[in-house]
Structures are given as C-alpha cells and as structure tokens.
Image (cartoon, rainbow, N blue to C red; front, side, top):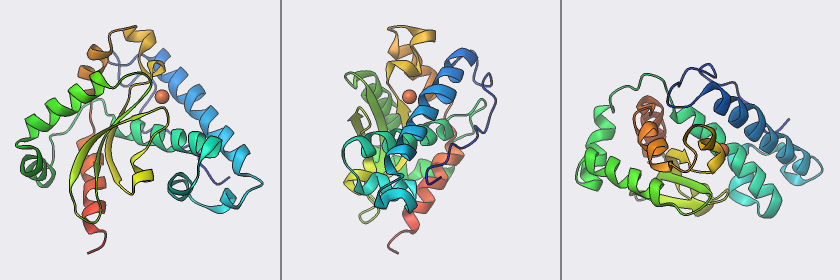
Amino acid sequence: MAIPFPKLKYSLSALEPFISERTMDFHYNRHFLTYVNTANALISQTSYHDKNLRGIVSTSVGPIYNNAAQAFNHEFYFNCLIAEPPLIPSRLSEELARQFGSADAFLKSFQESAIGNFGAGWTWLAMDPVTKKMEIKNTTNAGNPLSDGLSPLLCIDVWEHAYYLDYQNRRKDYVIGFMNHIDWNFVARQFDECMSLFR
Ligand SMILES: [Fe+2]
C-alpha cells in the first residue's frame, strides 16, 4: 500500500495521565487508521497510487487531500509526543531564540496559537526550506504546511477527538500538557533535514 500505518513508538498508555490509553486507542487505532485506509482506497485507481505520502499531500485536492493529509498529520503528531521529554537541542533552541526572541517566547506563542485555533485543526511550527524562516501556523480541518511549500517541524492536533474524552471542553489544559510532552529530538531532526535542503 502506498500509505503506511506506522507503529506507535510508545505504548497506548505511555503518555498517561496527559493522554489516557482510551483516548490513544480511539485516536491511533480508529481515527488515524480510518484516514490511512480511506486515503489508500481513494488513491488505488489513480496516478497517486505509487507516490509517497508527502508527494500525495503536496499535490492533491479534495477527498484525497483531506484523507492523505490527515494520515500525514497524525503520523507527524504521534511522532512529536514522548513520555519523558528531552531538552530542546541547542542548535534548535538557538534558532528559535534568533527567530522568536527566545525559546520561551516561541513556546508561549505556539501554546497561545493552539489554544486559540478556532474549531477543528492543527497548530504547526513550520519552516520555509529556501529562506529558513520559521513560522507558527494554524490550519483548519486537514490543512497542512506542505501545501504551502513549507516543512513541518512540530504539530499539535486540536481536533476535539484528540482530547475530548480526557479534557472535554478544556483545550487549554490539553495544550499545556502537550507542551510538556514534546519529543524535541524528533523536532530537531525535522529542523536539521530542512536546514540541509537547497544548500
Ligand atoms: Fe486527530
């Protein structure tokens, strides 16, 4: 199949109490899997069937885009999370400080954007692979920075299915929990990859 359903890098209960095993089971095994299966069914008879996921997301529209982007976004989101977060690697924190004033200023802005992102969507740290400028970006529904030619570095899912069983309407508490469970080594690898492009 063109679009894989990757294994989680931690157990369904690993992020408790921030995210319960029940939420992770619904989110990973049902929501994410449905996007992957639907996207694969939609592309099976099209020219997208042998493209990789980034290629499909970057060039498709309509239902194929919606399901492929949700497959990409969810894989990325689960990779951004970890039970015991590492410190932000210095090469990344120095760049965050250069572009946002300080790493803490970036964290505050990202958190506020995610809390304020109206309705269902995603909040991203993305980077222009040509200018190397970073930006915090809110998208709605399946929206994704790849469509704008930007490289994603970090994302949070703010669809209610990501947190409603644990937090109900308290998105702020979910976002604060997320900020304390970011796998900065994964984010730094995306940063390194983007920095190496067009060099
Ligand atoms: Fe989700």
